[in-house]
Length: 137
Image 1: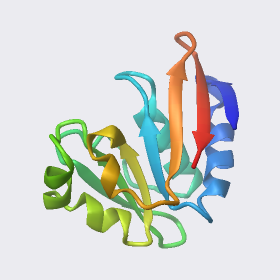
Image 2: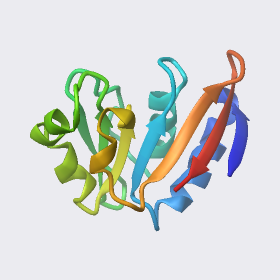
Image 3: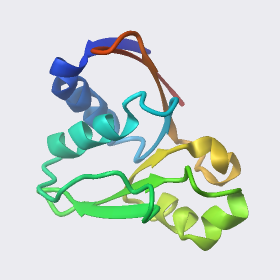
């Protein structure tokens, strides 16, 4: 599935992605630095009713939020991790198999630890305001 959107209507795309989370709670976000991965996670969390501040977990590696209906949401950034072993030691695998929502930036750092039903979203900048998403399992 391909979606094209402007950053001004990211909330509509976020709501559409949120409906996909009933079947696929783990989302791997692929894209270059600055493509908008964290911005998309922020919008999805907002659509799930998260009132906590949603920020980049680049240094903490794992941020945890709670949705309005009490669901735990993990936001993981594996950019600074070297490999799967380091991801496991950091607790990433525990999050992925926790049955909670997980949004993972830089999943290519440890591709072997993801559940089979992971939803993969590839985000591509078209211009400063427009993004293209490719969504698949």
